[in-house]
Amino acid sequence: MNLHEYQGKEILNSFGVEIQRGIVATTPAEAVEAAKRLTEETGTGWHVIKAQVHAGGRGKGGGVKLAKNLQEVEQIAGNIIGMNLVTPQTSAEGKKVHQVLVAEDVYYPGDSEPEEYYMSVLLNRGTGKNMIMYSTEGGMDIETVAEETPHLIFHEEIDPATGLMPFQARRIAFNLGLNGQAFKQMTKFVTALYKAYENSDSSLFEINPVLKTSDDKIIAVDAKVTIDDNSLFRHKDYEAMRDLREENPTEVEAKAVGLNYVDLDGNVGCMVNGAGLAMATMDLIKQAGGEPANFLDVGGTADAERVEAAFKLILKDPNVKAILVNIFGGIVRCDRVAQGIVDAYKNMGTIHVPIIVRLQGTNADIAKEIIDNSGLDVHSAIEFQEAADKVQAVLA
Ligand code: GDP
Ligand code: MN
Image (cartoon, rainbow, N blue to C red):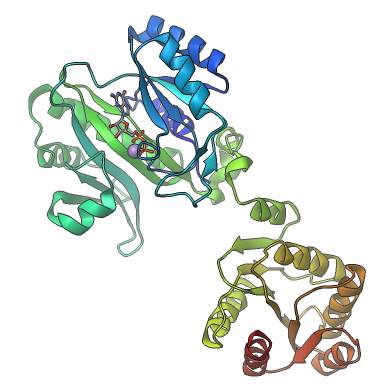
């Protein structure tokens, strides 16, 4: 589950990570109130207004702006709230901004040399260890740094059994070229950050930039936080942070009816039981010259109701030109699935794309008869390859 910057910062701060402070606002008037309160709390006169959407590169897209007085706060918040923010990480339509973070300006006026670093914490699946990735080249695209100056990206691997060792935190501060008070602050920052990562059950932290101010404070100015979905049962407070407006509507709907659906870019809709078979089916579609439009695991009980719900989800995608149903009847009998498909089809009226159904397992032959005798634009197949060939034929 992805979080907004302001939510990520809240979590970081709860573990003692120093952050750029801010207050979230949904209207220009609220933004002005927030700015006043921040001035009382932090003494800042200037504020940055930051669009809260689940996408990076907001600065480049005009979603992060400096306001030097309350009038500017109101005006900028008015411009950003409600806009469709287009960044290098959104689609061409962009993402609608519902709220802004009014934050203290931490780049002091006249400060010629604020240092921006990059820092992320994530799991290195290759080594089975957590990893802190960091760079002196913060504030910009880390992908560009990785491409052009890979020697400026450092890694620190952390054994989950021992956790982050003090010498590792010091090595990070050293590699970032720090000394004195800034060195000390950075080791504190890294230690708190790692603790936050572990205890929040996150799968990704990306802090870009981490800022060193001219008075040697180390502050998280941005925060991208991804919480491991499998841990949400023990973090009800994080689960409550979920913003469904930021998520793919079809995926949200699928989750509500208990279907495992992931939206993809292709033209062949898939309905499969079992995640492994679903992956194999996607490979097969590619081999046959198509592109999967989705991943969809209908699970063990493929009855008419579930099949219908699945068809409806798949057909929401206007790119779908054909649907491949690939179901193995182990516990669930193929003839019941076939009847479910026919019933769902009739119940829905007309489906405007051809459907190829491959049912294998218990009573597969009866299932084939049901499909073949249905009189609908549904084509049966028993073998995997046969199904792929039929998909190719209807796409051609
Ligand atoms: P992103 O573009 O989505 O990654 O959003 P960030 O939170 O990283 O902000 C983008 C950029 O805005 C940062 O790299 C900074 O250069 C700038 N910025 C953020 N906070 C402040 C601030 O307090 N004062 C000033 N002057 N600039 C800021
Ligand atoms: Mn950033």
